[in-house]
Image (cartoon, rainbow, N blue to C red; front, top):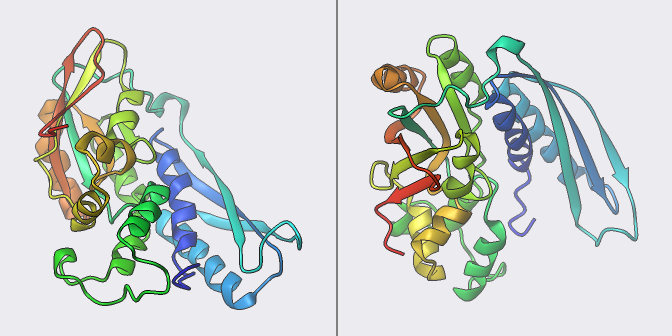
Length: 280
């Protein structure tokens, strides 16, 4: 809304649903959206809905309908609200629920395109503390962002992992999948692990996008809070048997995904995740 860019928020909306669905081994079938506003502005709503359609295309799901609601008095002028849901299908015997995860399994991280759809309350606070207001231009390229503007880096749409993961699951037994959303690596990876197991992750094993370094520096954010709030460059974590690690990485590379071996599963009576390489 601040930067009047409406064509990618629909991709984020779809991504948050379908990336969750695929972690169960399911293929998204269709998506429905809900768009609410005080007064419908076609020049805003049209690109938003186009973005939803693009997200569905990237996920291989059908956009089968939706609801548009005008509620003057409930929303401030210019405000709009988006919601949506997706339905997927998986054979009962193929459901991924983490029960296959075992000591020695490899953890593979797939690159995120940016902050995706999480941590933006903190991002707005960082911008405020850095005295970057909406009235200031943020379109100029910044060397610390590899020549991208701040607006470009922050508004990069969420990557949709459905198609490559569905292909991967046809060739590799996937033990667990964790979509790295709110809570970051610290909270999302432990959710897919059986009791008594711990994910050991080396934070130096992948290339962190420069936008996260910019946010940490300007927000004076400690390491642990960065990995609890943001994906920090890893949008999806895959757990496979150690013997399938290299094959998984090669298959993902063939499908155009950037992925790294980021850790392994170990036994631990109480600890569920250990991040190596953070200082505080």
